[in-house]
Length: 461
Ligand code: F6P
Image 1 (cartoon, protein in one colour):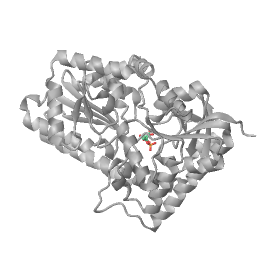
Image 2: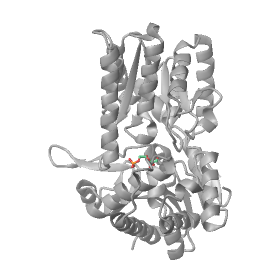
Image 3: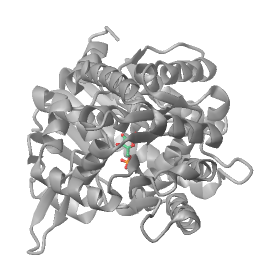
Image 4: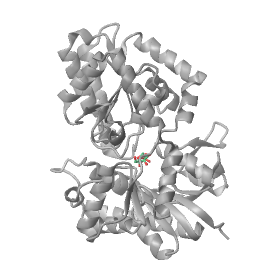
């Protein structure tokens, strides 16, 4: 019989992924993205069961050979064949729902809801039903199930019907869209989506803005206000500072120092992702170099842009567009001693932390972002009282607005001015702002966030 757990977490991506080493042994690797940082400490403290999808052959092999109880996590895999997974994850979750809730569609051309898409929506429903069935099987009487993110948006309704005794809480690590933006989806899908999430006991967001947008969509589609709560995720300061203080990080920092010398450095750390607004960041830097000849040769833009969702054509072409733009800007401005933009596509957490330490300016300019953990991580490890230039459309803006320099992410000239202001800022003002940012960021931990979810489950959302 399956052990009956009192707390079950569901997410598409689990805390571990597996790959074979040179001798063919399966080795665990920490899962990509901010979800593990956010959920990990609470899941470990509570001994919760973490249910996640397995579709890659090595992940399925690891699940079958009982390797999922590792690194402090108890996991259970929902095995999904590759074709179904591609339809659920690439077509619906990434190309449809992600674009809808981040406002990314190029409406004259896309989306295109045709027969192929309708089949993908069926696959999306099927995967959600499979997750709900596994949760129903593992959850003890009266257990709490914490459903993470839009990929599993249909789970709360299915699970609540299967197991009315279970308390289901949903949390979206993303923004949410307006009712008008939602109405681009076919009516039946939009209704199913909102009925799915609306069946949760409560649905949480990182920012009050996204919670309000979600509530407006519920009112529009379901004719009722759902229970919502706001719980901004927190950076794991101890973990991050341990990485920042490691020898490996010191060597990454020396490598970066060799590259940039004593120049000022603008840093960004992002997935190669359309919502992160990388192009406008580079256009702004280009405009800055145009307007300020004194900065030429004196500033490097170090962009850590690690690969993401490479099964989606839009992501591949976006990465190409970003590279082409950086090449053009470099061809225009570089000198034998100076390359203005340096892109590092490697997914290397330690090198990213080294860059956050070295940043004179940290640029976080998403079109729309649920929170943006990097905006909180930077101030914690930065060595130079670096200035945070932050999009007003990032959820983290709620907490950091007083001491970051705010930008409208669509305004390239405004972003160029904010970068200039940050680079020119006096040492006194930088010190005061970064101290205040650190204080805000340190005031919350990942466990506080997790406790907010448990509080919502107990009805104190
Ligand atoms: O921010 C939303 C989110 O789904 C996170 O939960 C996740 O860490 C990130 O996007 C990356 O997404 P994916 O798992 O598709 O790479």
